[in-house]
Structures are given as C-alpha cells and as structure tokens.
Image (cartoon, rainbow, N blue to C red; front, top):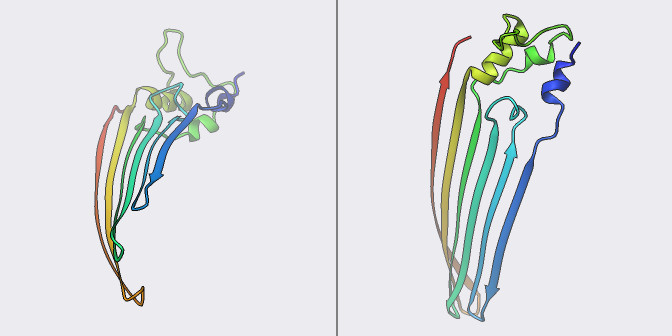
Length: 171
C-alpha cells in the first residue's frame, strides 16, 4: 500500500546560487566584473543522475580616450550542464496504484508498468547536454561640436556550442 507519487516525487530538491561582483571607476575608466554559479538537483536525483549547473562570467569596461571619444566592451560567457535519465516519462509513476510493486524479492524490476518505468529511469540510460556561449560587444562613441553630433559604432561577436551525449538501454 504505497503512494508511489509521494514515495518518489514528493520531496524538496537542493538548489544553490552564488554570485560575486566587483566594480570601480576612475575619472576616465569604469569597470564591472561578475561571476556566478547555480546548481540544482533534479526531481529524480534520488533515483538516477539528474542535475543542472550553470556558470557565468561578465566583464564590462568603459574608457574615455579623449573628451570626444569613449570606447567600451561588454563580454560574457555562460556554461550550462544538464544531466538526466534518457527516459524521463513520469506518467507510470503518477498513475501507479498503491498495490503495484516496483521490485521482485531478488532485487530485479517487476514486469509491471511501474517496474518498467522505474527500470527505464534508473537503468535505461542517461543524457548530458552541455551548452556554452561567448559574446563580446565592442562600442565606440564619438561626440562632435559640443554633442551636436554623436556617432556610435558597435560590433558584437557571438559563438555558441552544444555538446549532446546520450545512451539508452531498452526495457
């Protein structure tokens, strides 16, 4: 007589988030630096590898080269990792009856909807998705004739990459 939804899914997951930033300025220069980390255990982390992490950094600088010319840069980098079971279908857990059994006496999975669903989550494979993104924006501002005319020039470079790995075991 088990409430399977509560048994596997009714729990709090651990999440943490940390950020650090530093900024400063002189009469001609200003800067800002930051870094961050976020991590979270997934809903199924007690059954299988299920997690999310994110690392981020940012650097901004602005420099007044002359009283008519200012240059700046804003660069950020983000890396995320997501690991989870290949089969993430929770319908059979939500729909399991209190009298269903998940494992046989010998420890093997039962040949029931619940047993097969849990076997697929625990032993059915894993997938990992890693995304990285770098972006850097350069700009220049030129002011002429007491700001009667202002000219802005911007250039942004951006590159992203995704690495996807998975394997699956049939049940």
